Length: 64
Image 1 (cartoon, helix red, strand yellow):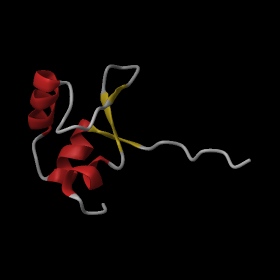
Image 2 (cartoon, one colour; image 1 turned 45 degrees about the vertical axis):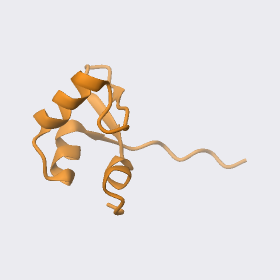
Image 3 (tube, one colour; image 1 turned 45 degrees about the horizontal axis):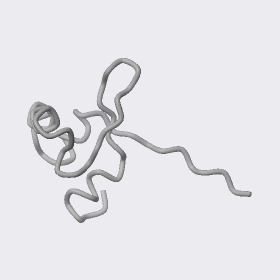
């Protein structure tokens, strides 16, 4: 049986840098809708939003 690979996450700042946005833009959209254009983050133990590493690909259609 093959173990599942660990899920990687990006912080809001890292996601924003990949998308060429300000982190506040992502936080504002998340606060208003609960997602960032369909991508749902996980809340870390310190209340940081952790975005799936494939978020950039899902949002842009281009592999990161």
